[in-house]
Amino acid sequence: MPLGPGVAAPQVFRSTRMPNGKGSLDCSYCKYFDGQGYPDGCHEERLCRFHETVLPQPKLPYHNRICGHFEPNESYWEHTPLRRFFTLARRFAWFGTDLEPGVLYEFSYNHLPGITPLKVLRIPDYHNDTWKKPGG
Image (cartoon, rainbow, N blue to C red):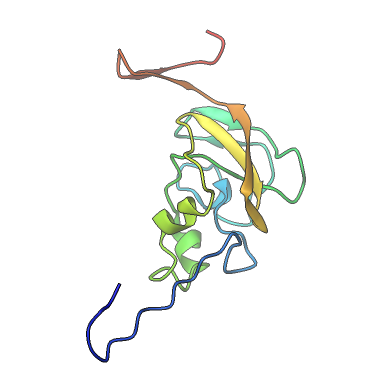
């Protein structure tokens, strides 16, 4: 698409990898996670105050955990110096799929399209505008 005389098209960065080595999309970077921020509790069983349940460890020790209700804590912002270019919405788009509500996922930050469900934490009850426990 032409931008006008003398205006160069912007370069587009497309990636399926995190731009830093910390993998800052992880439950330990979420404000609902029962920890002080990465690395406190990373890969450990810890309480999620949003889902009101203990999160399981990832199946693989180098995998990160995330859900669609992720809200960054202070350590996320400290470890994301290029956040004006790599917004949270853009990072979630790198997964290439919608994250279902109430589902915890795991992934390798070196291969974001490989994200897989880890556990159903809660099930949305759209009719009553509330949550149900899985299997109940």
